[in-house]
Image 1 (tube, rainbow, N blue to C red):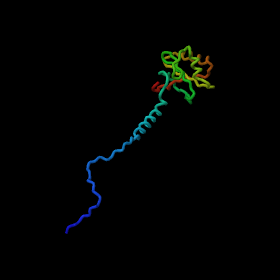
Image 2: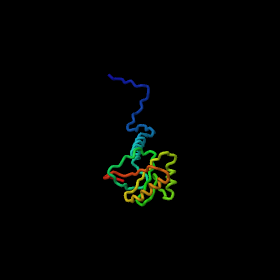
Image 3: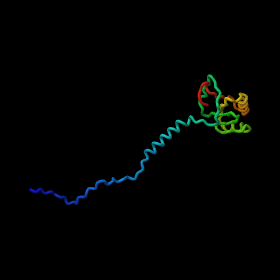
Image 4: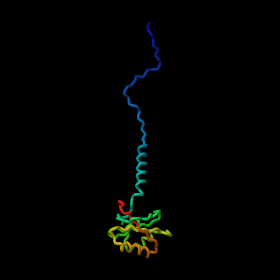
Length: 152
């Protein structure tokens, strides 16, 4: 007995082996977003640690007091060579009072603190304190590092 196979009326397509699947032309941005978010987190963590202004080797003290809130604080730095800086801008001594007034702006009770290099004579720091007082500002603070603390 012969068995009969039924053939469909549709033509059978030959099977093609090894034909690559059709590629989709779309860009995957997930890795890009991952990298951007990691960079954002790195910059957010590092931003508070970045110091502006000159390198100043602070004098040591046994018990420094906390400065409290740093917002609205005007930072006057005196580097090892005696150069003056207000926040992160170098200032000539003859323009110190004008630049300090401009930095303070409309602040009614500014917090002015001095970062003096440890190699300076206190006389030089005192001259800056007197200049700030003559400009009309009272209550100048000094920044020091805890004795035995690493870094500047």
